[in-house]
View: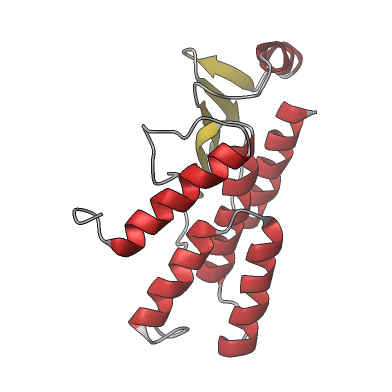
Amino acid sequence: MQEVGFSLYTDMLKQAVRALQQGKEPDLDQPLGIHTEIHLAAPALLPEDYCPDVHERLVLYKRMACADAEQEIDQLQEELIDRFGLLPSPVKTLLDSHRLRLIAHAIGIKKCVATAEGMTLIFDKTTTVEPIKIIQLIQSKRHYKLLGQDKLKVEVALPDVAMRVVRLKELLRELVA
């Protein structure tokens, strides 16, 4: 506790207790509950002119990062609109990133990258996605390709962020269907 500080220690402890309550072994490799990375090739942040107080921005970032249900992110979105006004594009992208993170993390994907040229998913060793599902997708859709043992690449034109978010959600749902 002295090495990491009280706040970080309590976060780590909560994570371990939550895992034990769910009947799981706490992940000692990632005691802070490092989540899935989402990259949408667009700014995803709370701009200074939208939320001017740096401390408030940090608190909001932490709340988003700690959210473990889509309803929490929806509540944060409502709060942001109430306090600061309509959401600028970087804030929408930030909220979409956190929603995608929840979906991807739940099925064991550690990284999602969506650019104008396509999408890449990197699966975690604990993924719940059935290998047969990935094989079926690759065989039925020629723009799906497996790169190594843990990467799925989808070559598709995604010129704007909104399309990337929609298509990434569809792909994640395809993997669990």
